[in-house]
Length: 634
Image (tube, rainbow, N blue to C red; front, side, top):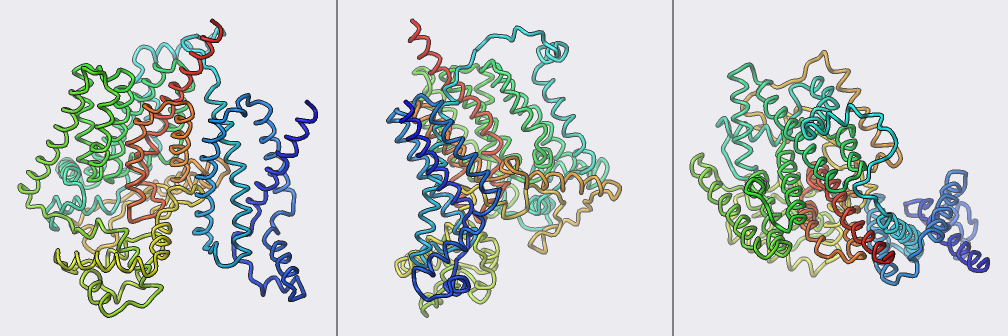
């Protein structure tokens, strides 16, 4: 036994050493010229040793040594405490997990620090070492998490100790959803007061201007929400002033969010019989960006709330095998409609999910979910077409859907010369003279702006796509780099938000376009609350830069949890339950196809829904482990 322990101590030591190296790398290209300043010789071996020395200069010191020791201790504890290390299934899936996340980290580091992995053999060598270090780390983390998921949960048993919070428990039991909602609103009250009338995104300002007839309508923004924003703004102006119009929408969002979160928390608590469900309450009540998100007029908030309602009802649908009451069917139907109406890409969520929901349903309920989903889609299509005719709304520019091709074209043009034919075809879609200066690696917004006022026929658009396709074969890596540049933040937690910060803390009346506030609305904060607003905003950004807590602001972290959860469900053979993750994956794929990298407001549906899904699926896994232990006892 001592020999085995020594063997695994040595293995853990080596794995921890490589992991420590991954965290102490320079994350930049070490040139031969820089190496010569310490090598003092043109000998290749001396130069490469000097490069290694410079690359791992952060490896010297107490901080990285502590990281090494903690990593070694963690790896060894995983070996000692996890009884299932000999599980071949676990080894295979943990290896897949480690390969995925190590790849995400390697690609993310490459683009974040602008390090070309393939610039020379030395850089390939360093990248390989880093990859190995990440691999050992993520493999052990995955094994550790699966052991946590297997820990037995005592369902339905109350703690024998005297309850110190008996009065609070009585209030909760009397009206749980209302009680939790009031607590959440109390926690959010400082934001509601000091940020009155709430914050507003430039897109919403455009939507209100469309409703007031100041600019022409189009379907680029959800028509349904343009009507909601405009109607509430008009009502607020009639009652008091412009500020109150903005406040009406924002306070309505806050109230809906508080009650919907309370409904979800209460459902998870009743399902799991675990007080750990109230960690979801802590996350939403005290995490500083949630109140400001819900107090912001922007289409993504209503979409995220609609998506959360759809996800909660989907969890209930699975748990009941589709045996819903009439009330539940109505709520589910409404959630599907709202997901579609609040954002155009919401259609993908419903269309891609409902065929799998049919699988989850009991035989007698399969037809009901099929009819419910189809009718919701038909209803939305008809209602949107009706509104377009009633308000003379035009279709949005189809070039809005070409974010990825336009970004790839812009990146190609910034690196290589175009042929006369390519210039002629592309110039009919986008202004080439402005393209190079507009190009940014992580956003296509400015590139798309170069296509404004450029009228393109269907035939010209077809010609562009043919040229775009041909250009790929000339320099395929350029297209790959362009796509990864604008998407890696969604699978790389170290990438901070690229645009608009962690939340909208302003009333954006200017935006990127001169007609943003065409309705000339007088929306503003009050000078008396400026200091308090600044303190709340700075506090959030201070937390964003704190170890561990800061990751909760990261787009990439939530997608890592989503992917990791999927692999864990595969390990536990809970394949049917993975269907519940399909809506979240539709949002992830839409984010990847979006025009902006690592954009928090695009990620809101996943960030908002994942805690509830996580709680639900952990409970499903623990049911399996408890049943297995009971069978063994018998």
